[in-house]
Image 1 (cartoon, rainbow, N blue to C red):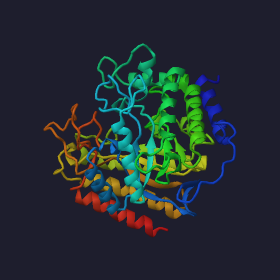
Image 2: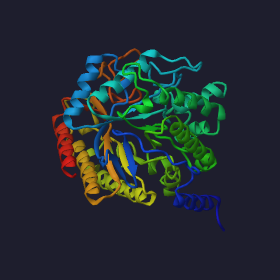
Image 3: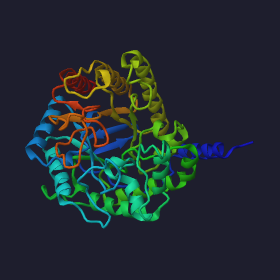
Image 4: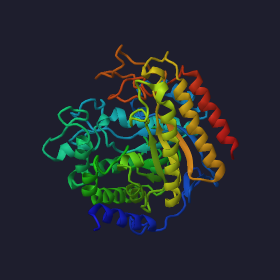
Length: 441
């Protein structure tokens, strides 16, 4: 007997094999010089391979201290970091731990501080010859995200992530309702038009013509759900959302790449068919994966030394599986989020990073091996850059009104995964990897 799930998997695998889930795409002229392009499993820039060492700097638009913004970008550029992944959205939300301020509210009113903050960040990124990947909403609660679009259109109903009354996977299963809500998706598409079609108020250059942008991402970590039944129920709408949004972005801005921002297998209930089908759209230019051994139970944070070897082995296997999937898709692959706790799972900048450094080294080796072999893994972005930021409170928790943003978002302890400017051994790892990647040609 063929089960419903088996039938879905067979159908999706067949669709993925054609690489045309999104429907026919009109041929577009090549972008002008200075824009990153996709050529098969490679990214190129002005005719040369584009490989990179990257960082997540989600809060770039929130850095109101312009001198600090410049110092942070100078520090990253000095390490050889050339690619930054940045939030270009946040929805004003009642969800616990959602960031303030937000880009927009339910009425569609925008906070000009964040719009101009994003403009300043892009202007400064461009001055330094760096590239940015901008994501346009979030599956998770910490920036409002899809759950907020949904509650704006369903009469105000929502649940909080990590609410004991709604244990996992209640939150991601709830958020999957976003794809099935035409009203919620329409509000999100309004934001896409607003940002992708924006002219930078600092440079006077439309975002669509700015070579400092490498790519737009549909969202941070979009999932079809948190459980197999809900994912199967949502899948057609999830695919419709991917295809429609990617086409919308390309219609406004044909110069830049587009990716989903997905986690890979962990965001797809470990199902290869879901990864392949979500990345097989003509307008999705490259595939992505995220890697969190401490969040996924591979690393026991109460026994880091005893479980580090297991976490490293499983992480290396996870990367290899995504390289194989990217080959099947004939797409470049970016490991655009990866994080590891400080030794002892503490948050102080004074705590050593011995195990984290080894984890970073394994990832850097995987990228170099892929580049040298002509395989699809072309870059990585560590999570995340804390730089000179420091937690304002003894418990390392973000509180409303705090304005010294760090790479650890408001729902997480500040210092948990972020890299400080004082983390000398980690910084040297990043610097050495940048040199090696450049030497690889």
